Amino acid sequence: MVTWAYAAILAWSVAVPAPAVSAAPVPSATPLMLPMPRPEQVLAVPPELHALLQQQVIAAGGSGRSRLERLTAFLSGGPPGLGIVYSADATLTVEQAFRLRRANCLTFTLLIVALARESGLQAYGQELDDVVTWGGGNDIAYRFNHVNAGITIGRSRLTVDLAAAQLPGHHPPKAISDRRLLALYYNNRAAELVAGAASAEAVPYVAMALQLAPRYANGWVNTGVVRLLQGDPQAAERDYLKALTLDPDNEAALLNLVSLYRKTGDETRHAIYARRLEKVQVKDPYFHFLKAEDSEKRGDYGGAVQHLLQAIRLYDGDPRFYLGLAHAYRQLGKARRAQRAMARALALDPQAQGDGSE
Picture (cartoon, helix red, strand yellow):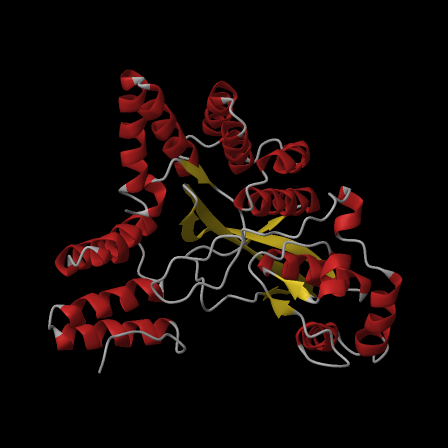
């Protein structure tokens, strides 16, 4: 079963480096139970971190590019650097990431934005709506979008991204406001709480996300999911419909409405929104990618090939499509086609690994 056939779909904007052909991991089922910070606390740099930043990044001066290079080395390198370790469920404030030395891609973006600004650089969050991975568990499917940090130095606009190679997009990243970036933080924390069966604790987080970004369609979807988990399907329906007023093709909202109307037995509305959903999905390369994964699990490698070829026709820039195609062709005994697919995957990402050759 493909992941979006579960009862509830969340459109959390969390970024995860995705392994080839595999769905992204869901947030941890045991998230850190940290108190909800105020918005001004999320990007705040504690004095101890500022002192280290001054020593390791700022004091040497130099050009903006040299400061940025020192900053990225300071974050990821060992002592005297911070040695930040990637963790998919580590949606943390800047101070928490400093204390725990953990970060997912959203938290890494917060760190880069906050510390680059402390270093005298122009920094901001960026969102890539067309970079998508999916994961699932506990009757909930998660759609993972992607964020990274943008830096403007003179006339150059640079991107700092932990997962650029693993999560390619076919549109350039879009700069977002701090309010939107903070809304994504609260969205992600809510996702971690829901994954940990703490949907009640997620309520103030989705509320804050909507307060910061009331026109963020996925925020309304996520609020609806939380309300559904809290036993209020009528409120969930209103939230999904609100999301569609902001984004008429929002796949997560349509998925949730189809699921909701199926459960309630509303056949008329179920049919209406199922048709709308189908029109969106046939144009979504990642829908076909996941259908291919589902076909492979059933041993239908011919079906997987057809779905992957359709995904590539819609967008040929994701190496995971070609890795999946190479694997499916290999299972069908079509070695030359597998090799060609693998060569294309490697052209898109030299680090790609798959089953295209023996």
